[in-house]
Length: 312
Ligand code: RIB
Image 1 (cartoon, rainbow, N blue to C red):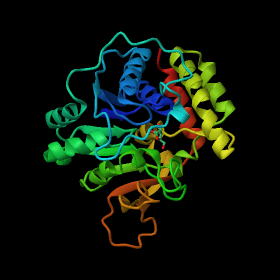
Image 2: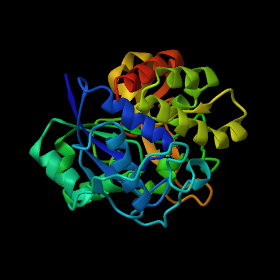
Image 3: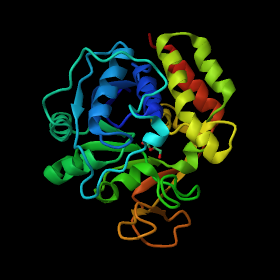
Image 4: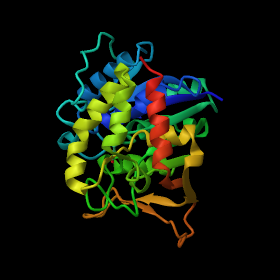
């Protein structure tokens, strides 16, 4: 069955890999549009990066929409220290010929979900600002979205932007709180599983060896963005977060997790943006999330590399 996707993204090299992975699986995914989010870098850069990526993949037909320029309440926190000043540093992608759509990304979400009730999967690689605003502006869409599959949160692996918070949640915890309380079927791919997916030199070499422009560009981007995490964690490869979202949709059997309650800390001075995952089901809070804790790295990279190899 082909899934209709709306992709929420603030590329970021790892999200570029995720977007290209999705576009390399045309039988599995019908991408209705990308909503550029402010996050890793500013909105103007994420818009440009989305346009660059659909052109790189030979899919200039896929519309790109601009979302909100900042989180719902908090000032924007970015991650240029990881992704570089443009967010896609590492690959030399030409400036795009195509243009961003005029319609706001929030209105695109609302209009598209209403036009396809019971058909849309929200594929979230970014902070959840635009989905949260859409839910506030049009509460009816909550019952029309099939599911949300999102890279967000951490519990056993703790935080990456603070000691307790994962970046996508930390940037806009109020948005994450709104979305996780909306009653929509939701799967989270947190740092607990993405940290198992490490881009070792062998895996990056296998990606390069395919030789097509999308595989080469992805390997070049990841070779740039890995520097910060290799220095931080000292692992044999940097964690590759974004592609866990399409990988879960393509091959859920290579992952494992459980349905639990996940809540977002909003008020802690040290813990704001923390996802409080009730893994041992200590509370009676509603089980609102399928929380993915483990995955098979070899199967993951095989799937990613094969998907990229399907592209130009
Ligand atoms: O916390 C990791 C995630 O935050 C990555 O997807 C990165 O691109 C940022 O969005």
